[in-house]
Length: 91
Length: 319
Image 1 (cartoon, helix red, strand yellow):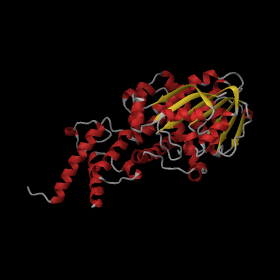
Image 2 (spheres, helix red, strand yellow; image 1 turned 90 degrees about the horizontal axis):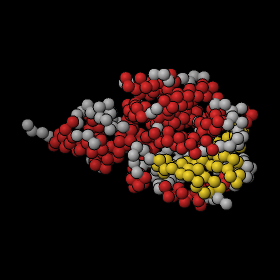
Image 3 (cartoon, one colour; image 1 turned 180 degrees about the vertical axis):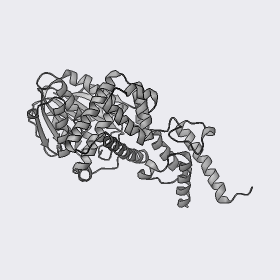
Image 4 (cartoon, chains in turn cyan, yellow; image 1 turned 135 degrees about the horizontal axis):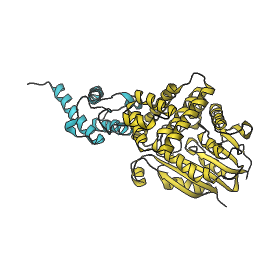
């Protein structure tokens, strides 16, 4: 399968998101799915959410405003697409 | 709500409704409230139901359209507000606002905003682990020690639950309530009245304590100064002036956060020793204090990682 460069980047970013998410939430990387959310990830609460936003900013060198940080994503799938959008806008 | 939670709170009508509304609307709050509920005993639920009931009564008196669902919405608005500040603080390790006049204009001088603020903060008293611990400290170390017929003053009334707690024990106390917001003065007055105070025993003073403090020197038996100093640009001057208002054996309940962002916090403490030094530099002595962190976090860890510490203390004026 031939993937475009942008698709490879997206996959790479998704893997990086997983690493960040797993570390902040102390959640096994293998168990992370698009549906991972505060409903099914025990440690995803308002405190770890703040840490997650901050860790994503550092990892991807993106800027997330306080307003965006509150409710830009409620599950892992939304998190990845939010990061992608921010990351691509940066370029 | 799951069955375990439901079973624990089913008897407490007001509290249960509030928990139900909040849990339905916000997963983060649902989870943290669940954790709190599972840890608590009978006394907590009785108190919490009573507080929820009183907040509803006071809020309804000031705005007839309020009900428990609206209180839940206001609480969620308040937690969102704080989360924004936490995000800012996590990044900048500093409070967003530095200017008191700006905060006054944007926050304290808006009655409808302050109405929501008093409700949001008051409701946090039910669900936040650190606020529960601070209130426990206040009850055990101040309320229990208040003597008969005291003259008490509270600065920065907010929801008024702290002064009301003294009235519950000493309904003949005389109270001076000071705030820059008319709305908070009204809210706190009603809170004390429904907790047992007589109207005639309450004086309201709308003062900016950085400019004027309407209390006679050497007159106070009790001063409540909870979560006030961090809101001021001239905290040191105020703290020094307040010590002059105390009787020789008067006691002061003091609390302030380290690393505790909020839209109206200006004065940033990052370490407990800074707060202790601040107190001593302002002509007070510390009788007892307790720095409170979230969960089992050590003070050292909280200081190194800029996590919130709720410092509370009992003070007397220094000789």
